[in-house]
Image 1 (cartoon, rainbow, N blue to C red):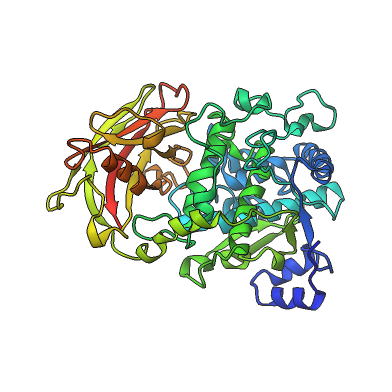
Image 2 (spheres, rainbow, N blue to C red):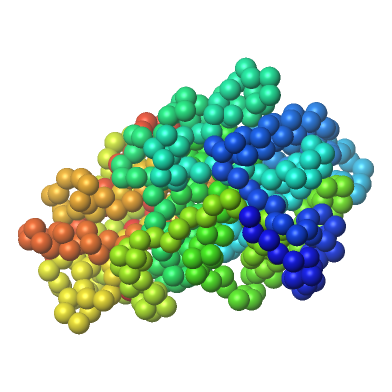
Length: 494
């Protein structure tokens, strides 16, 4: 158990913009509150409290800031309506403090509808923390902490398996945590990634990132977690009416234990030496939430960098990646601030139910090497990245797409596997202003393909110096009406 003195705790809070709120609602006590693994005995007890509170929140009116609908809508109003329509339905046409609060709070999920990608981790931390305090209020249990779903556990019985408390539709206590609109694997207690290429639960590459923010063609930790394991869990757990689609995601009680684990990843990265940005302009952005009394609170993103100053910790943290991997990925550190050199580009790829291939061809002025994109001689320290941007889908495909980089005539296989992409934040969403054309997520995937190119070089594939092929293979049966598109496909050196 980690402890902190009351004086140090209050002093830390005094410098934060949310100090008055925190000293009232975050427990300034000798021992930090601990969030537990949902599979542990302590975690299961917390899930019992959670289930009772979820039931009580469902019984509150939609216009109550402590209701389940209000908390869901803080993330995003459900996709069958709009924010304006729901405010009108719930509050009518007469202005009120609660309708004004809903106007400020609802649809503020970051960063899946065009906002700064760096907002993702601190915004969701504050969202989960305010929610956790509301559970304490509703349940009458000031000792409650939100458990986390440890889907990256090394235990095969837990890795990628939805906690049992969320899979009991007829249970008198836990039944409220069940949702029928999850995938079959999720609700049957099977690993949600069992039919996917590679290991979809592996986060070692993200945990080895050297910087918080992306730079050039290299993803930072925040974006690597957001577009990687975060999006994968959403897609592998839910369909387009549940976790698999942004407007419905927070309606599922599983959403919150998923995001508690995402928060734990960030805390672990910091604990392992990862440094958050000092005071960038974006970190001063303020957001509005409701406290345990339903009162308006405005606070800055930068106030949520450190979990101990917020009064909580975790029962276990994710260790740093093995030193060999960290050393390999550490080569990104010296190159990530450099300007990416565009080497090759492919035409946009319309994805479907079968494998889709598109050719990477050198751009004008690219010097020829043994394999397209592979640095030679003294430039060997430069890494090659396959960058996929500007993704879009008209509906959720409800699958991952696995990406392979091969010679023009090569077949996708384990040696050419690059990684997986998802379309969780690749739909247009209305944030209340009707400007759908401005409401797409960042959609930036970057894969270090240097080792794949070295393997191609070792096999002396003819033609690999002039062209390569990118293959997108669906990890299941995508929806026919989704029409997913990868609009920008580039190979860069950095």
